[in-house]
Image (cartoon, rainbow, N blue to C red; front, side, top):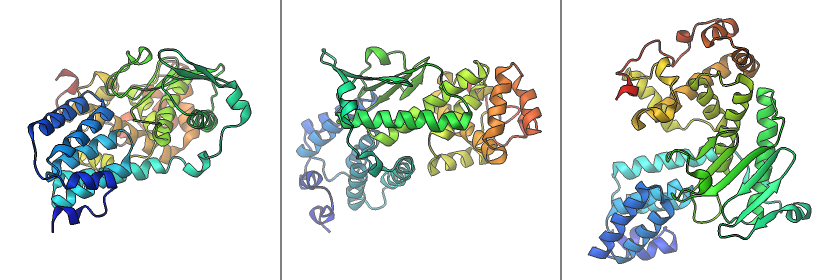
Length: 372
């Protein structure tokens, strides 16, 4: 089957690219720049270079479409990413990379789509909201919303509908997570949202490069997109950081890192199937991280262990929630806030020791990752 026939079901802009049959040096230059931009977390820029290179050549190479799909994945454009992977698989049906990425993106899309019903967010913003929305027309335009519970600053250009939807998600987070953990902040929370595309703004410079959210007394969220942010991703980030905020107030800084991050991760969104497979793989290979390692700040762990730290902590908390329920989780946080050591609090509330909890290990099954 010819390449043209294989691309019949692709979006129009991708179909045009499939017809190009050779690669030139300028195309290769674009692909090299795309890879560099991707490595710098400039995903929109990477996409632009991939598309420019494909217009010049290499459309017969499946791996280019597979890499383009990965860039689209990082900005939450799952449907376009899947379309790219469909082309890659038509060009090379048994490509393990394309097959693996397609499975992962389908998993991510399904997970995030469970968080919100998009039809609920088509309601236009009320006139009162539009009148209160403050727009700063400076060199770096921003939009500001003040409310009883939060002060929101959007550091990137967004339409009023998106800002309104973000406000609705904040209200929902305030209500749902407040009820879940039994605490509501006493004063308005400062929240900032910025489209970085890999370029740090003043409010984002102290954030680690791998993070998309940060709680440091206020909540800062970063997203990367060519246009409006993906609401479901922002919602997951918001929930994650809001849990950190609540734990900070409830436990007064005495919460172990694994519990803090595990609660934030497990409440923010469901675990991906790929993450569950990674967890099972770690169990089978006997390379779970020790409780001592999981109690170190995750941003200080080597990158290759950081993902497992989040997955493992989320699995621990998921077990505790399913086994004992949120009332006992709330009691645990209050006990920690009162100064009770975690080992004692676990014993008193759950009737077991730390090492009896699944996915928590008394000693490392592997060499100490913090020392590598």
